[in-house]
Figure (cartoon, rainbow, N blue to C red):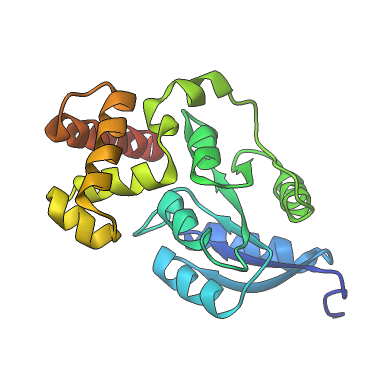
Length: 214
């Protein structure tokens, strides 16, 4: 069997279903456009592999245990040689939209043709964004999406019960800066205090989990 071509696309796969993972592996190994580097059934195993061996494209299931696809993408998008992600999942509810918001570059439906997954990965490797129809108005209407990256970090830290002083220490900013960001967060989420902001945060996380599990 001939090896991958010099221009082959390095790919890593992650899916908690061993049958799906095996089938995907076979599909990518047969296509000369791709070079399958590694596979994993967990987010932790996948994270360890991709940190050791950078690849161009990662195909992951949305409900990958234990971190989940959204958190995994968030962790890896800060890396210098970050891969481009394709979420492979059921095209139900808001999963494609949530995948896009998380930072994925593409979405391929499990119910679609195999060639669709391969073409999505090839397009993503070429720098394209590939998603089914998504009503971007819904993305714009979700107040969470109006938060800056720093504000999202502060809101997540706030949800752990940290005081302003603890937030200041953890984020290496002054307490006045913490108060400034909290004021902006309250305004954007239309809440009055930290308790309501935390409740909003967990409500948004629960909604995302319900959609992901559906």
